[in-house]
Amino acid sequence: MIVWINGAFGAGKTATARELVELIPNSTLYDPETTGGSLRALLSAKRLAEVEDYQDLPIWRRLVVDTAAALLAETGGVLIVPMTLLRQEYRDEIFGGLAARRIDVRHIHLFPEETILRARIDGRADYGDPETDARVRAWCHGRLASHRAALGWLAADAYAVDTSELTPPEAARSVADAVRSGLAAPCGIVQTPEPTRETLAAGVLLFDDQDRFLLVDPTYKPGWEFPGGVVESGEAPARAGVREVAEEIGIELDTVPRLLLVDWERPEPPGHGGLRLLFDGGRLGPADTARLRLPGAELRDWRFVTEEEAAHLLPPVRYRRLHWALRARERGTVLNLEAGVPVG
Figure 1: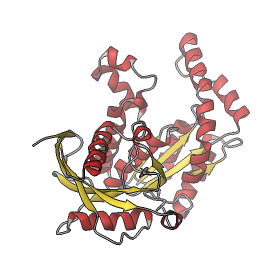
Figure 2: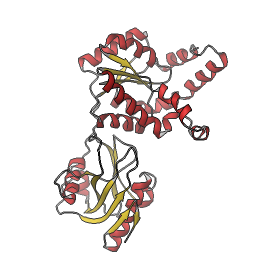
Figure 3: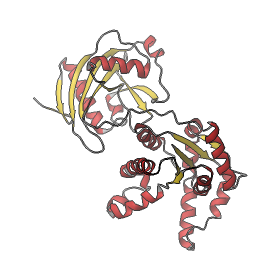
Figure 4: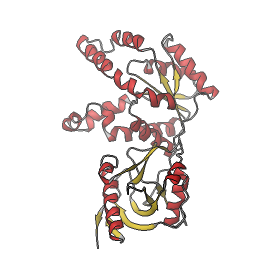
């Protein structure tokens, strides 16, 4: 189990985490700041200069998941992780990666009232160097707006502890009590176990009366996606698409969808690649759309979009697949792709 302590920069996450280790038996402290620091020795100055925060580096998010999982495998028990996560898509990616390893996460949000938080930031002197401490304080103040913007999804996702009047030991006791009592329940995020070899996956394009197609926003990985998922052992791919549509959005397709394309996805760590199939699931009428339901643990949102709009929502590999699937639909044919490029 992981107890992830979130909150604004300067909210007292690390101090609370250190106290919490003393209250929860067989617990270990892991601060992802150390992972960020190691990237300075691993990546070029040019690559580091391309981002404002090392959280924006995909390698940091992958390493946090891998390090947390490795630490739990080594030590067992509970991992205490004090780390600010204010971008929901990063939370989704990291917690989804942990869920894929069957690791429960209890998400805690420390939120002192902002005037108190600002006063605490102004009192920070962590480095003993006036110039460095001033830069850190300015950096923390500069990110309070991001914290305010994240309060909506944090309130729905994390167990909140108001630390305005609490010392770090008191805050740690509140967190420990919430974890022991179950008030801080495991996050509902769901993801299938990580594959160990190439996989076969089936996606389904569903259209509205304006010829827009449906995309869904998974909670467990960045970027939007088509309804669909991994084909189970012994399952026909088209039937897998029908099953996934029913499970994901509550729509029962009356007919087996027509195949649009087969795309071979190149294995690129950490992914294993494999065959990706896209099917034409037909049109959804207003009555169908009214019945559409999302499982909150897996999907956050849905929308009908145009191909142009999809270019800003889908990762490049999925967008290329979509582009050729739409061309196949227009031509009434089936396309064979390798890494997003038609062949044959």
